Length: 375
Ligand code: PLP
Image 1: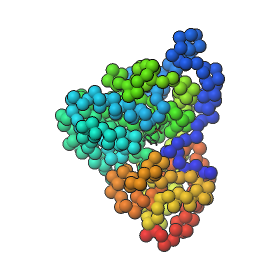
Image 2 (image 1 turned 135 degrees about the vertical axis):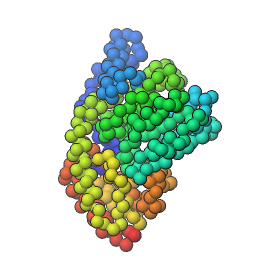
Image 3 (image 1 turned 90 degrees about the horizontal axis):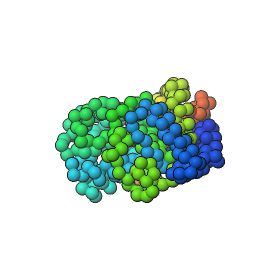
Image 4 (image 1 turned 60 degrees about the vertical axis):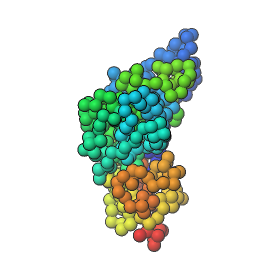
């Protein structure tokens, strides 16, 4: 199978798997145990934590390890909003967010919060003027993702941090799950930031939440008090050390990988540009190409490519199980039939020119095969 679904998940680095195995064997101890082996494991945990904070250039932050970005997003939103309720009830978010943000915010409405959506520009970025106009004294929480998982648009995080300096009561959360190694963003000044190891060639089951002021975050689940009493549960040391390894490798090769993927991105886009019933979404981060076979269903295109040994997804792996039209593509004012016929091609560090050539051939074959279905 030629893999073009790296925005859904990535293959772990061999080195990350080796770290996982070694730590599982030699440091399987509970980091909370006070015997010498527990202390050794705990030292390893803190070394991994510091390395990740260093690599992310967030040295003044704390980092809480979780099981996924979904969990990190939930902790940030649910815990903050419990605290913030007395100061205001309005949450601002983009129209581009992942379900692990949107569905939590929708749930928060039952708790008396108002959720308002910031307008989106043509390029799939949040409109800063719209955000500015929505900031009033009732706003307590703003959440905007760093890099969109459907089309790859990179959000103006630094500009938002700057804008929110005049609103000290607002907590700013960033879901950076897709951005690691893909966009060179400065997160300093953001209050909380979510990441997930399996999106940057680490292993599954490990996420992180960077926190600017630990005192502002409370647990969502209560237990033995691990991870600064914010995320109880025996710590997944093998996964965490593998995440530190994957992060170092990803950031180390990011420039070279992105340069290569930029050329592939251009090649894929150029190959379909003359086809009447193909619509391309705006060009953004190099690793994603989102295109629609207008008139067809995205699932049909995905299956036709899958039969040819090529794995892509419809809009996003998480959203494709939902019957509703994709929110990001809706925010970009796409017609229903463009959204229904959309597929997401997402490349990764192992994507080769040969893979891209095979994909292009298959896309053309599927286009021909669909014939009159397209309109
Ligand atoms: N946020 C974004 C932008 C994502 O793309 C994803 C996964 O697709 C998530 C959050 C959820 O990540 P996880 O699988 O670690 O829960």
